[in-house]
Length: 248
Length: 269
Image (tube, chains in turn blue, green):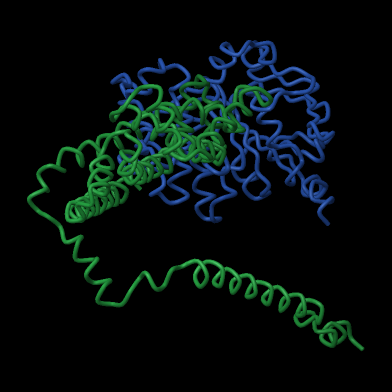
């Protein structure tokens, strides 16, 4: 059984814009899949259709045999609790500490009163600290999130997603708000962590170099359609060129 | 001729029509101001009755504070402070559900609850605290309770409006992240919305407390408790030295209030 099975996924926004057009993707093994395409090619929409932050217009998304589209709100929250998402703008809660931000990743499975009182189980705090150490922010756990640099903030975002013990990582333009050097570090960390955790990671990027350096497989998107889906080692220059044709 | 030269020739920054309109507007403004000065300041003030400098100083001397009266205003001053405190606290409690209804992005219903929230805010903000106090005194009798209710009714609108605006301006990012992690709606609100709203909310509550302290000091004029009642009594019995004491006491209270609220605000923000 495939880990992730997307069939005929289509999304039309309210303004009539066709963001995804009958997309099929199957992920059978834990691998790093790069979604490559220009802005507006549907990368973010595709990621958000997997956890239904964006409601698909038609088509199915199966994760570990569960049809995500058929879940009621509380079942959807339970399913989302096992999907780690990482964002371009980090989406941290600025006024809370790094540790609180990391622990907020468990809010899907922690009773709300524990979240309010900050009474997280001891083993959750222990795990949060271990994860902070792994992503290199252990020295900053008591600082407020808005006191960190961009690269450190994205590491907090990664830690928060790992805190969910995710079955899949959905990563949306993780390096677009960072400078190139920090971006490569963050991308390398993400790829390493996905492999350590043994989970698939779908990461949208618009930088060909990052896609080729850190992924096992590249899916090219153009105007909501898949134009190629290949092992990274097999991707040829002209298929990459086709993605950027629209721009030239 | 190049296009830029043509623009240069027509000189868009000094278009004659714009200039004429601007000078006409200034002239109209000056005319209006001079009419107001003539009507209110020149015609309506009885300059003869004001008398000379000596007479002015003599009148002022009536207000030299009588410090033996001070012990008698300590309790009313304290009552004024407590009225401001309870009035603000009550306003904050009542403003929470109103702000929730009046924030466009979280209101339960666009055509039912949103207009109700907005209407309550307008009602509260457009009615003077003395009007509220008169209504509550008529309903509940004299004393600080109608004053507290009047202050609460008056500042409810301000607290609810600024809180609703803060909720409308929250950054969607953290909300999206909490939803993506499977957090419940309550947890999303407490983790992603509240921390963003808190600084503005706390600042506005402190600001309301400061204003309510000033408002509380006059509500006694209509029998709604606080220092205003003592003030009205002294004024009516022409005991201007007592009025002077009360004014000094009030200034002290307001300045102390402002000092403390500035300290607290610097701490929070």
